[in-house]
Every structure is written in C-alpha cells, then in structure tokens.
Length: 157
Image (cartoon, rainbow, N blue to C red; front, side, top):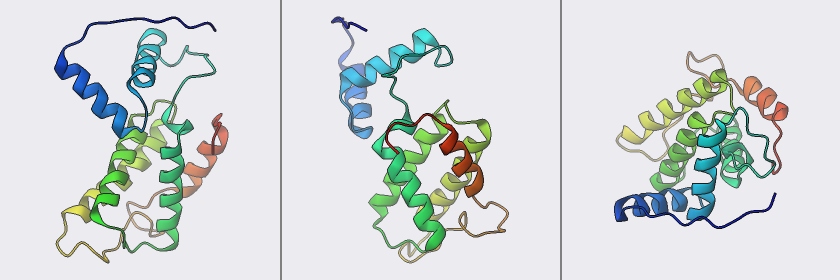
C-alpha cells in the first residue's frame, strides 16, 4: 500500500505525551501515531493490514515472555527495582492488547498485581514472586499463555 504524508497540528502537551509514549514503546512518534490511527479507523477487528503494529509483534513482548518463563524457573527477584518497573510497563501494555483473549489479559493482571505487591514491599531484593508458584490461588496459567501465543500470527517470536 502506497503511503502519503499527513501533517497535523497538536498542542505542545500532546506532542510531549506522544514522544513519551513512543520512547516507552521503543518506537518513533510517527509509528505510534500511525498505529493509533489504524486502530481508531479500523477498530482493530477489521484491520487486515500486514504492517499493523501490535504488542505481541514486538521485541518487548518477547522480553516479557522470556521474563515470565524465567520466573517459573527461579521466582526470586534479583534484578534492580528499575527492571521490575519496566516489566510492570510491559504487563500494562499486554493487558491493553486487544489481540489477546480476555482470559490471557486476566492472567497478565495476576502477574501485574504480584509485581506491584513485590515493588511495595520493604527489603525488595531477594523477594519471591507468587504468580509463578504452581497451585497458588493466583498462579499464572502458563499453558493458556503458550497455547494463545502459538495461535497468534506473530512475526518475531
């Protein structure tokens, strides 16, 4: 599909917010705005454009998936608090991703709740996550995650 340039006028505040969002998603403002416009215009369900940018097609999603499985193997957190704050941001993006089922987004919410619990605790280093403990009431459903990820049309995972 041939593209064209579209110039728009926005407030300084909106421009700054867009730049911040683009930085957080490791993208540029043009790609971010293009993605927002595509979702708005095509409502994401009707969008059949091959170049659509979704969270599950990003390096960030791959990082989140690797982190989730690493916690299953070793639930004690040794990373600096800033790294876990980054994980919290990635979980928030996953929860907002409409290509995931509501069931999987609920699983990400369990992890987010546990991440926030751990960040709020004193003596943060060497604390253990609970979401990755099998049989725990708020355990993350890794099987659901694997099944859903493999059913998606993911380009980079």
